[in-house]
Amino acid sequence: MVAFAGVGGVGSNFGDITDELLPSAGVGLRYEASRKYGVNIGIDYAVGDESSAFYFRIGEAF
Image 1 (cartoon, rainbow, N blue to C red):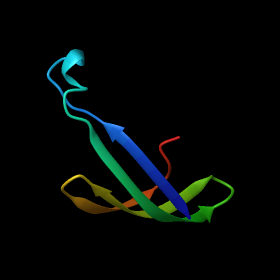
Image 2: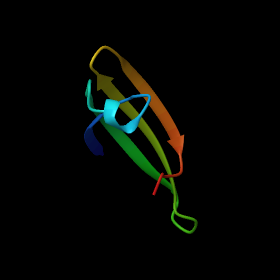
Image 3: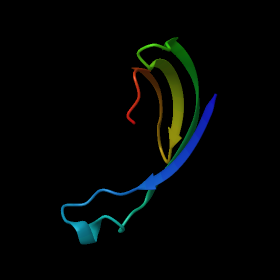
């Protein structure tokens, strides 16, 4: 199981990024599909300021 939280921003230049911060948080599950190749399968549910989403992935970002 995983839990995560973060905050980010969007802007047309670097100085605009902190004008409106966008928080998010969520939970997820991971399954080790291949120990030999280090492949994980995951499903996450995330909630933001005005939206929510499910994410499915094969592999990891890092």
